[in-house]
Amino acid sequence: MSIYLTIFGKPRYLGLMRLKDEEQLNHNRWLVLKTSRGYEMGLKRGMLTGEQEERYRSEASQYEETTEAMLQDVEFVKEADINDIEEYYMCRNDEEDVLLRAREILVSHGINMKLVDVEYILDRKRLYFYFTSEQRVDFRAYVRDLAHEFRTRIEMRQIGLRDEARIVKGIASCGRPCCCSYWLRGFSPISIKIVKEQRSALNPTKISGLCGRLMCCMSYEQELYSEMWAKLPGPGTKIKTEQGTYTLESLDIGNERVNIRFPSGRLVPVLISEFPDFKEAVLNGEEWGVDKEMAAKKKAAQERIERLEKAKQARRNMRVNAKSFRASTSKSESSPKPKTKPKAKKQKQNQNRNMNREWQSKRRRPKAKSESTKKEG
Image (cartoon, rainbow, N blue to C red; front, side, top):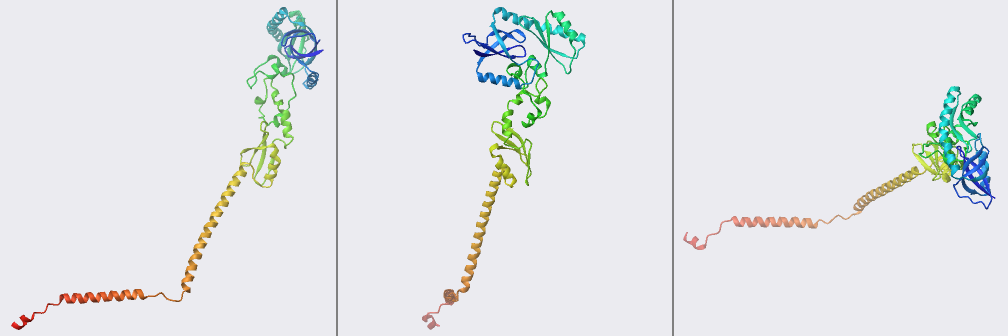
């Protein structure tokens, strides 16, 4: 025997169907199934192993309880033929008129309830009404009027807000169809603790789905968040140091980091594996991350300035020592400097001056008359 997964009904119930090994059915074919509600049309999915069957059953027991069991054992009747498929779609078309008429009858009874949808089973022997209500209502008179109007057995099913979104369907805030309307098998309980652990905004319009409850997708990563937070103090934890207060803001799942708000206001990512070292460093007054790099650069620049100042002071000391050495050397010399050269130069200048004077005097003196002139006189 082989076990196959099937889907049937507007609430998308899951069925486990057993087939003999010699019976071969095509994938995604319409089948006529016998369920707890009667004869219904269902779609055949893949074959399940024993481990998969156990996982489906264990997961179904953890989901929130509803009126009908979300996982049932169903019986295979036959493959749907053209007549069965036509009857199925005729039922879907007639359900729109039935829903409008049922709402008109409900107004006349004045019952505080909301009709969400209706569903015929394949042989039309039962007509299911799905409704929501905040309190218990007495709808016995209303059911009698419905049975008289539609000439079939009436089944009333009170559903929750999440089941309403599953049946009605719609587009979620992410831009895709609601998970519950096309693939989600059941509803896991979601609490505000999950929102706080993921550090999501506590704004109802941002964390709620179309049903008004917390979005189901918040539970998809919760196991990973829990595993990572197990290595860290709780979200929002503050580390008080002399430099200021460090606050754990949020987790970065993809990079396995925790975002920490520094006293300066900057949001700095720290690897989860390095968080113990980070905590020890900041408690000891040391810098971390960008601050550590900036502190190292500042320290290197300060050391360079100190080295330059020392070198400048050393050169200044060398000049002062050289001047004092020259001064002490000139004082220690006892022999005066020879002054022969300046004296000889002055004597030569005087000698030249005297020679010039003599030459000028000879030049100005008149010439002596010749002897013949003297005799005639």
